[in-house]
Length: 202
Image 1 (cartoon, rainbow, N blue to C red):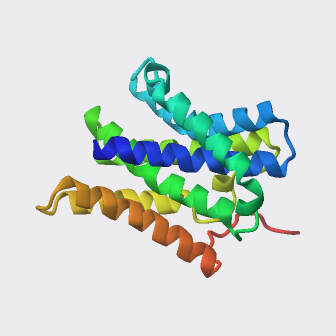
Image 2 (image 1 turned 120 degrees about the horizontal axis):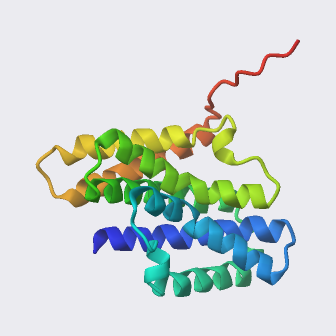
């Protein structure tokens, strides 16, 4: 039940982040809906295909469609207010990756995969919806830039497994992993911490 709640919150956050990008690009209503939709389900769809969980979850549960459409409508309706909130796209994107990282990890654990592969699934779940969103909107995906993105997912995943070995309820590991992702991402942007590029000028 708790994992399902995390999944729903991540879906909402990513759908709204898709709307914010699409509206900035001045797409038509159908385009906004498509971008919001693929942002919300892109990573989870790829994850489910990789672990053989088919039909993928949003095709089996119509509630996801309702949640995404409602979130897109909310994002469009309050776009003018959201766009004046500095870093609103960053906020929803960060919340999304924090939540979806742990969802991906726990789906991997349910499939009986080793921790390292579970963390990879967490990264895929958290990032590939945003990758599809950015490609469709003619942007370089954030995960391929210098920003701390996948690294935050990795460290959050490691924190999850460390906390999972401590004799508390599993919810502590879930919440702890999410908070680590959020904290690292926020601190990296706040203090302009980034990975070095391999490009060298002549």
